[in-house]
Image (cartoon, rainbow, N blue to C red; front, side, top):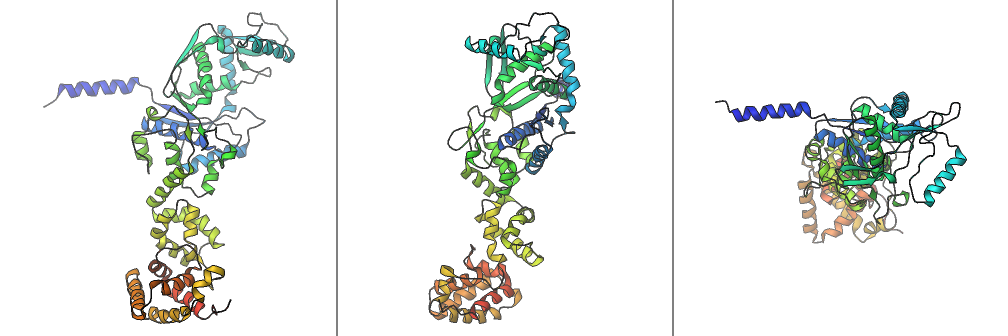
Length: 490
């Protein structure tokens, strides 16, 4: 039986889908340095909000500052985003290529009277700014109502209207400015190049951006840009201004707080998923949920309502915890690839097939003991040691104790009797326990020298696992190296 109510609801949904514009967000960094983690978080917020809404996320490089913009910085931003898994829709947009559209908008504002030509030279401008500062008023040019002066250089300035400007911000709430607070800002410089304030409005409009999600250091710019949108007769996007990240001391994040670029955290051994998860939680919440492992589960729940209005503090302990949880969940083969560089650093050379297999087999014992890939590689050091292992100082003390070498010799004979198929954690544990019982000694009497001989004092899991993961051939070879060396002398 057909339910008329279902048909009506379906029709309403279809109409809503047709009338509601597709959500389009953007990340618009200036290519003057690496991908700062604050910028990375902004990109993530834009990316996942677009995904959540079934929209699009675009990347725009704001490279109009030729003196400071570099190709290297642009590539660093792109590489950082790719590493973090922030994938933009469509081609990358370069603001410098849109200059004609920016100029056209400035001309349209001139023709409508919303902008004017300002003929003030540098000396005039300084005096005018001093007067404005002294009177605690916004800048107003005396050329606001002057007719065109042919042949004289000029800038194009926006004519701030009287009244108030109001915005509704998804994070900051309702905000109202008296337009007297806004300068008559420059739209085109004297050389005809557009300024940021004009370019960003034109580009966002031409890209169809529906939601501008960015740092709250741009909050007042939302007021200025709203006036430009209105003067051009364009729809104003929805705003969401996110509080900046602060350091652990509560102060604005700076170099003194440590590494700031995404690539620095990559080199510190953080997983892209771990850092992504941490940055998302740094100023956004979804109930009590802390851990998000897949793009799908984040996209399903991310919304602007969950963004906090108070600044978030960088917390390295929390970052380590979240990254450690991602290490635990990462497939062993994937983790092996991600850890390759760090394992090679520990090994001093690329891993051969034998060592790679050994580490991969040990991955389930390494993961719970590591918060970063650097720690994971360090936990794997005992698996990579070259024979004969150099064992000196305090690390050699267990081997110098009375009876240690004799016990190693006796145990080695027993281990040799184990067939390859019997070389397992259970069989080795039983063999060691039988040896200890038969010789009526504490486990430390045999365990300490065996661990020293096999690991050289490097971090390692339970002894039974050390023998199992090293394998019969490598275990016996390391033990015999020690037995055939003289550890009884200082």
